[in-house]
Length: 251
Image (tube, rainbow, N blue to C red; front, side):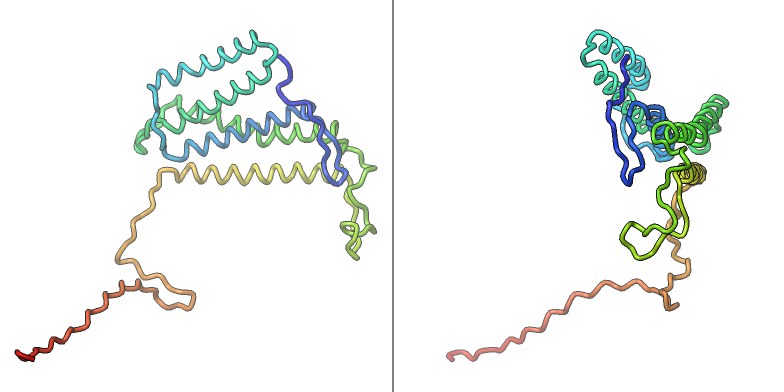
């Protein structure tokens, strides 16, 4: 099977280097898997909102049907092999999210089974392995091999040079490409850690329901400390009395 990624050569701004999308394939696919995994967790946190248009058994049986059908079509139509496989992968992902979003609502009081806990642990471990190990490692490999950011003799900017090339202020320090590479890797860890903690909190609070407004609760206060009161609806204006004057007969 040919490489599924297009053979594009992209140039980064500010002379940061050129790279080929196929050479960066491992980094691209690992990021895509991490994004899909996070999207699955977010879908599981939200209550199901879709109605499944087919029985559950049919939905489960469609997974191998989509996979086998995609491989057979790609085998017998080699001229469109890459396009068929990409479309098949997209259909598989969409069907997976449809099955998750249309799942049967779960009772919060229902005890988690051993198999559910084991599957959840495997999924969390896979996401952590992607976010904390595979993605940073593939970026380091990509930056050193393709972008050539491992060369300490190359600088993004040097001390004494003007900032942005036109400001009357010089850089107080030098930034070489290995330092830039390490900064990017550090930011990857910071973002993944923030998402990790946020997803943990959202998962723990997924069954909580917002409490109804309590009439005995103290009134909200303005920024000046005064209690806020609800404005009563404006009363309808009273109709003005109409005077009737009797007219004498024969007038």
